Length: 102
Image (cartoon, rainbow, N blue to C red; front, side, top):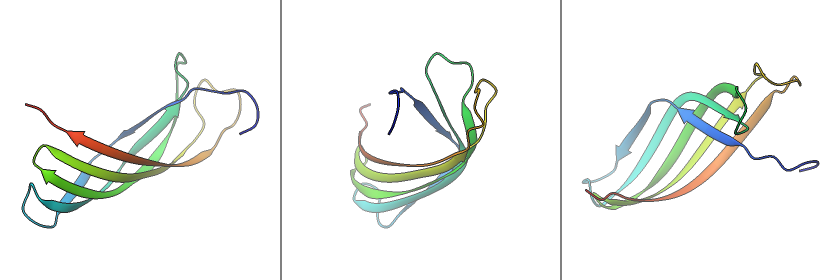
């Protein structure tokens, strides 16, 4: 909030489980997951890393179209190329519209 503007990228890698509450193609669904989380500045060597969770849900209109609201939270600790002892907790909310064409 204060200081210079910084561009960051983030990444979540891990397994997630989806549960559909009806027939595929016309159903509400939920998702949960746990994995590794990280973020950093483009052009730098390392990133802040830690464990994270994923909780979400949505509706599948057809087998190719769904909407999803996902919450990803995690905790990232110090990294090899930072000159400060950073320890960061973060939460991201994503709204996705997925359309699959094949």
